[in-house]
Length: 320
Figure 1 (tube, rainbow, N blue to C red):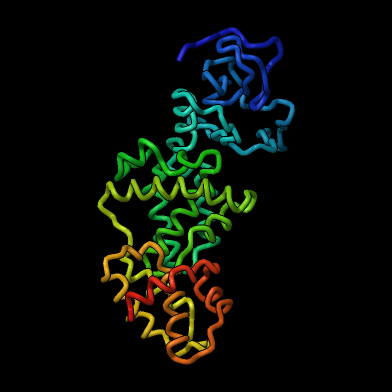
Figure 2 (cartoon, helix red, strand yellow):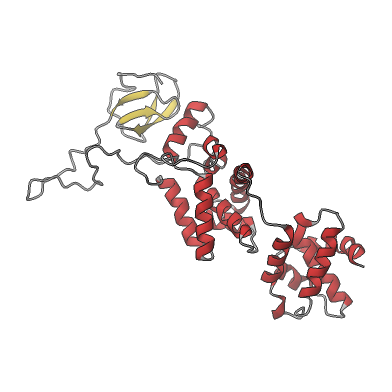
């Protein structure tokens, strides 16, 4: 990175100010890095920045400075900047390197503000204390801090937040909550976590960005030899959460599990469509047992749409 002593404009810049960079000739923003203002696009140094706001600093009765800003002790790093919504401006390597320095933290042993936000989301939405602990462990694996030795070179190369930039914080939390729920045998749908952790984003867009972090997390865990839960465990969790004991289908749970096992042994690769197949089995078992068939109830209990009925004939041929 080149060093420049001249400023990009005649007036003194503040962090976040927009200006036309004389080095890259682009309309950019000034970002603060170690008391130096840099161009957000090309990272060229623009000018020094005085961290002390003299207009706000006052002396108390004992002659000590008492301003409204947070204190920074001698020898410590100043507060880090926060990534804004720079969609489309992080396509070149230097910009990604800058984002990486910001979001992997400093040398003070604490997570960055963005990662702390993801941690807060995990604390807020985890179902149990064990689920929270597992999710936070996954977050540390997929989003390693700079001053810690990461277990995964893949996470250092491309952490989970980067895959979903500029919605990396919420997407990372959603991915870790979902995978932790899977590993613990909870019935989990990723769209549910994505909407919880990305409340300001539309449902479709939140899933789209969230899946990028989820896919990256799968790659990182695969490099560590950590595999996802089995299909039978996932099906069992879905049946348990359906809680058929509260419905007219209260006596079908065991028979549905037996039929599911038959379907998985048939080799038709139905494991990836567990909800639809289980709903279809419930529909068939209700017909066979002379019970009223209520598609709306089945859809609600298994959290599926009407499309589950497309599986009925195929499943019927396997279990009869």
